[in-house]
Amino acid sequence: MKPLMLHGHERAITKIKYNREGDLLFSASKDKQPNVWYSLNGERLGTFNGHNGSVWCIDVNWDTTRFLSGSGDNTLRIWDCQTGKAISQLSTNSSVRACSFSYSGDLAVYATDKALGHQCEMFVIDIRSPEIILSQEDNICRTLISGSRISSLLWGALDETVITGHENGDINIWDSRTGKKLNDAQGHKGQINDMQFNKDGTMFVTASKDHTAKLFDSDSLMSLKTYKTERPVNSATISPNYDHVVVGGGQDAMDVTTTSTKQGKFDARFFHLVFEEEFARLKGHFGPINSLAFHPNGRTLCTGGEDGYIRINAFDQSYFDFHFEY
Amino acid sequence: MPANYEITKSWADEVEDEGSITLPPPTVVYENDFKIMTEYKLNDDNKKVKVVRTYKIERRTVSKTIAVRKNWSKYGDSLDDGPGPNPATTVIAEDVFMQFLSSKEEENKVEEDSLDKLKSMGDKGVVKCRNCNGEHWTSKCPFKDTVLGGLPDDKKLSINPTAGVPGMGDMNKPQGSKYIPPSMRDGGNKRGDSMLMQRRDDTTAIRISNLSENTTDTDLEELVKKFGAIHKFYLAKEKNTNVCKGFAYVHYKTKEDAARAINGLHGHGYDYLILSVDWSKPPAQNN
Image (cartoon, rainbow over all chains, first blue to last red; front, side, top):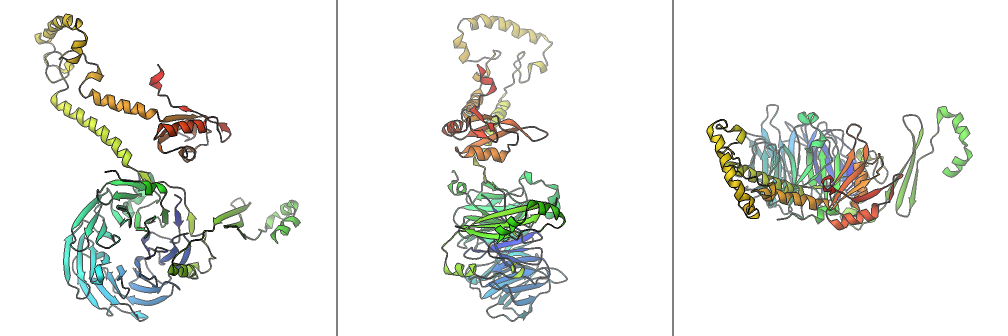
């Protein structure tokens, strides 16, 4: 395959996300501008200019009208996807680490960092008709997270719950209306860097600093499978049409200079969902992979790396011909 | 009219006003489903370089919402980009292939199996002293210099005549001090199998020689992969300079593919040289 290499960012990619149909690809990096691309030919549709710090988290709603971004400049912004103009801006006490639209697109949730003397907090906000300027007080539900901060989050089924992954490896489920903790699990021994659902949302895969990716039941938080690697895992994703899990990672950014690309530590690694066995690798990046996303049709895998590049890998026939022997 | 522009200007004129080279304007030509962009620029040596980019235009049927989004006008930093990918932000990367690991792992397993067997055999005492039948090497025997050392010699004398007569019968029941050929030893079977496997592997291998020294791994792969699935290939290279030594070995998955590759490539001209392709012959199989 000849991947498309997108070079719209000056610094490390933090997050990439397809919209629901998969025709657009959104990307955020440690530079200040999230980008949006046509996934088919890699053409850049535009950039969302306005943030003054690293953009840590992004999301797009299901009908691709609005785009959400949370940044290290202590703001959460809502953008119009068509024009790239900001619809509203919400100021927070510390940087926004994780954010997500609910499935309906009426609500959004975001989590702030534990920093500058402030605790980690999680806010659920109504964004049906947001004001231009919002503050932390404009919320439906505000939850103080004592202990370890939130590093990743997902909306649960029917927008009733929020699943959070924490810096110490814990996973919690919260009621999105009352902010009460419904369920918890000690999922990992290290920070959870990423959580992604499977196609129907019954399971999700977590990527953790403790060198593993794990598959959890979205309701009971039971750990179903473990995919072991020998390096910190930054992102993991589940194929929408095969029993495949792709895991990406590498060293911490500070150790990267001591590693050669030839060692294969920066490959995307394909595991079988059920048998937990690695069956393929895909090279490409010159640094750790920070974010992974499958196209909703499962025929393309997109990777964003610490090297600042996004690679769109449209699979060869050999991938579809491959059958895991068991 | 870019064509006229080129004719009116002779090369001599260009040499004269070398100080200020005027570059022809970039052109975009649409030619049945291909978009050809031609651009001129100066390279590091101040020489004029023509850059031609060819894009294939594809038509796809998509849902309405996607079609609407496809017609959105660009914004932000891409505001000034024309239609189609901007080469500054979108690059087509080098070819990469997925590496499937399953076959490799199986090979490793076989090796581990035989190793395990050897290890477990070690526990039961493969090592046997010829002097005292203890579980140590003969050279390390504590009774080497004592009377015990002489005993087996007597034994040997008594065994030898009996062994000489039946011959074949004795081979089946290997006894203490008798020399057993490696192929007859316990666990030797396993070894033999794996050796056989290797020989069978070689039957799908071909040797390509008279390759030019510019050949690279990717070139070779391009050349050989169209004949069938490749198990592995090896391109001989000079250790220091990394320049091709002129020959390569390719293992196909099936013998048919290998045969087709030989038919297809032997005598075939490749990069100014004519290839010579034949079955690979392991050096030991000369007789």
